[in-house]
Image (cartoon, rainbow, N blue to C red; front, top):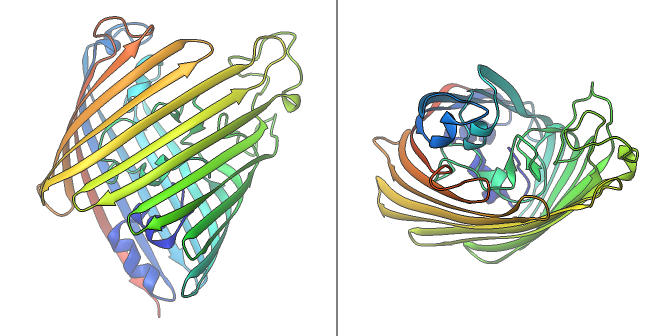
Length: 362
C-alpha cells in the first residue's frame, strides 16, 4: 500500500508486530491480514455475472519485511483474493482466485528530530490521493472503497506501478514525488507494451495534532492499444495524457475520525470527446466502546460520460479480540446504472491480523 507521508501516518499501514522488527537494526518480519465475507446484492443476479444474489469470498494480504540495516529495508505486500470480493467485481464476469503484488520495494530511510527522508524503488502504489494508506481491511472501517479507487477503469488503481519515489517531511510539512512506468489509471507491467513515464506527487501540512490537509496530482499518458476505450483512428497513446488533481483532509478528535477527498480526472482523447470525471467522498468513524464503532462513507461521482451517481455506505464494527474485527456493512448506490435497489449491497466481513514470524538480528 502507499507509504508516503509523516512517519506516524505511514506506520498506520503496518501491523503492530512488524514495528518490533523495524525497531531493530536488522531482522525479518511477516504480518498478514485475512478476510472472509458474505455478500448479498441484486447486482450478482444480472449481467454479466447472472448468478445467485448471495455469495462468499476471501482475501489474504501478506506483509514480509526484511530489514537489512538501520537504513535499508526490503518489503512487500502480496494479495490473493477470490472473485467477487470487491463490490466492483459484481460488474465483471471474472471468477477464481487472483494474486496481485500490491508493493515490492527496496527503501532507504533517514530520520532526524523533525525531519525524515525515504527513497523507494520497485513496485509502488500510486502517490496520488490518501485512501491507499487505509487499503488494508483491518484499517478500512468499512468494506467498500471510494468510487475513484479500484481495479477496473478507475482514476486510481490499487495495483502497483514500477518506479521510484522520494518522501520527505520537514516539521509540519510532508512531501512525496514519484516517477512510474505507467499511469495510476492504467498500470502496465514491465513486460507490457505502451509504457510511458508518469509523474505523481503531493504535499501535506499538519495544522495541529490530528488535523492534516493535503494536495496531490499526477500526469502522463494512460492509454494502450488494447484499452477498452482506445478506438480506431485515435492518436498514439503517448500523445494522450491524464491530468489528475486532488485534495484531502484527515481529522481525528477523541473517538471520532474523519477523512475526505475531492478529485478531478481529465483523460484526453482526439477521436472522441475528452473524458472528465469529478468525484468526492466524506468518511467518518465513531468509536462507541473499545469493542464497538460505527462508520459511514458518502460519495458522489460526476462524469462527462455515464452521468452522476451517489453512494451511501454504513457499517457497524465489533472487535471480538485484539486481532479480530467483524463488520456488518450496507451500501446504497444511486444513479443511471443502478435502477431501483439494484445497486444495494449487504456485506458481513470478518478480519483477522496475524503475526507468525518476527526475528530480530541485532
